[in-house]
Amino acid sequence: MARSEEGEQRMGWDDARARAVLRDLFDTAVAAADPRVVLARHLPEKPSGRCVVVGAGKATALMAAALEEAWPDVALEGVVVTRYGHEVPCKRITVLQSSHPVPDANSEAAARQILSAVRGLGPDDLVMALMSGGGSALLALPAEGLTLADKQEMNRALLACGATITEMNCLRKHLSGIKGGRLAAAAAPARVVTLAISDVPGDDPSVIGSGPTVADATTFADARALVARYGLKLSPAVQARLAQDADETPKPGSLDEDFRLIATPAMALQAVAARARVLGLAPLVLGDALEGESREMGTVMAGIARSVAAHAEPLAAPCVLLSGGETTVTIGDRPVGRGGRNTEFLLGLAVALAGRKRIWAIAGDTDGIDGTEDAAGAIVTPDTLARAAGLEPRKILANHDSYTLFDALGDLVRTGPTLTNVNDIRAILIA
Image (cartoon, rainbow, N blue to C red; front, side, top):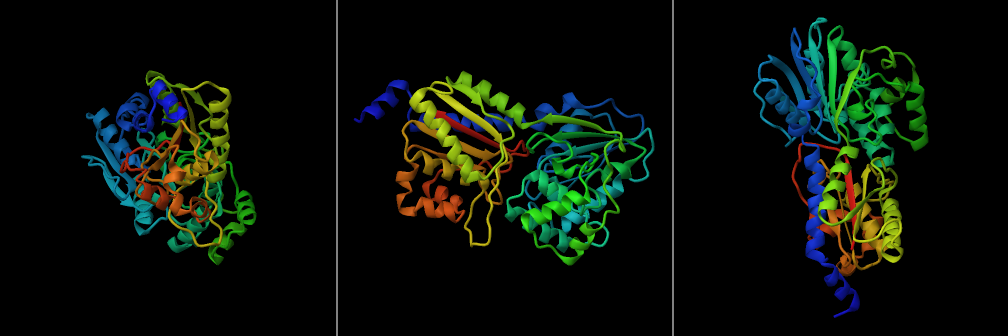
């Protein structure tokens, strides 16, 4: 038996245990953001008038169900929209479904129905807005002069160019009839309380779902600058819309905002760190809002993991490096395969680790979907590259085909829809 293998056994760590612990940590992050657990403690006082519930996001149907359970004596009404396959039965709130990450006709229909639901309310009425990740695509109401096709084309361009979620949503808000505070403006003079699960770096309320109930500090000039920065090719109608500065979004100070974060990436990471201690690992949280190119982030994280293994810096093994946020995959013009930002991060990590012993990792999107595929993410082991040798891992990484590699190895993490979303969770275990 090799000395390194003997060392692993003496420490009590082998592949089976490491895999089980990593999956336990990921599941802990998801459970910490369960709306049924966290929503009730953030509710406002019950209204004296009507209570209209609206919302959009991958977690919104479960949030609506949790609200119905918490307020059985309130005459709730309204409509929310979630992604196909993420519906949860509700008794008083209508649940619609539409497409993500590119909106479809149902996204537009849902937006029109939600906007209609908040019109004509009075000062004694309450609008409960339930927002979570995915709301930008699920709630798509083209601004005047635009069509759904214009917005679909713009969304595809944004997804491919490597823009951050904050940049994407700046553009989306200026092409929308409901985002960037427009929903809240339509609800006046009713009180609007927003309960949100954050999936964005920094937890900026105006970015979550493109902020339908939150004033928008960005401008048409900002949107035009982003188009120029990424060289986006957009339809003539979109170009004409962005070329003028009329019909700006509601600006800070113009709305009476009550925005409450009920779950965030930081909260999930804190829960994971606590669970890691119980499992015998020293946790180090590297940040809840990490951004950057996925494969490059993998290289950086591999360097930190090697430092831990070789020098016990910045902490000693057995330990786990934890991080959250949202990396990006810049596709460019070349043909690409199948993959998401988490599997691309992990393949970049595996290539950089080059088979280093006693290091395992998991990365996944807490909504259960890494990009558009059926997996939340995947697991990397010390022998990932050895097992994938015949698949040409570096070529696969260059072609953004990481899903294919991890699927072939049987190392994808499949959870199905989790009905929550606090963005990506990454854990690197060094034993």
